[in-house]
Length: 147
Ligand SMILES: [Zn+2]
Image 1 (cartoon, helix red, strand yellow):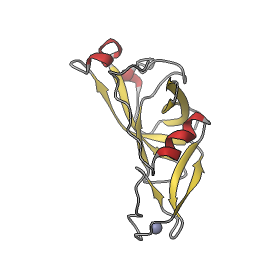
Image 2 (cartoon, helix red, strand yellow; image 1 turned 45 degrees about the vertical axis):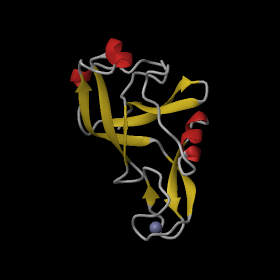
Image 3 (cartoon, rainbow, N blue to C red; image 1 turned 180 degrees about the horizontal axis):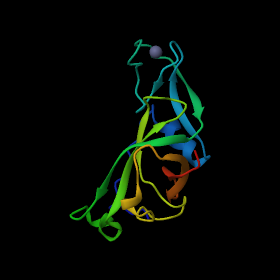
Image 4 (cartoon, helix red, strand yellow; image 1 turned 90 degrees about the horizontal axis):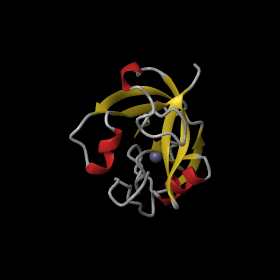
């Protein structure tokens, strides 16, 4: 679905590995090598202990819906054909407090409006899917899972 009119993330030296992980079907979290806190979004310094050291830790990709909105027109032109569509905030099961924004979809290759937004509930269990959106960019998205 990607073309130049879709919103795509910028990357820097701290987020390159985060985005590269999705192409390998992995959710990698920047993790403080000093205190063990996960850093999301990626950043140079640990917000808990101010360490600059970090490593990458793979998360399970299991999460629950923490919040969501349903986007209706007017939206950016590239998204108009998909509206109404959902935007969810999920909290990672194995990293409580780490919340990611994405879309709840029926499958990795399904469009962002593939789930009826009226049936979405806060607290629903979800799991990550990896949706290629261009030749060199894969988005994390979410699909329903069993509890
Ligand atoms: Zn730390």
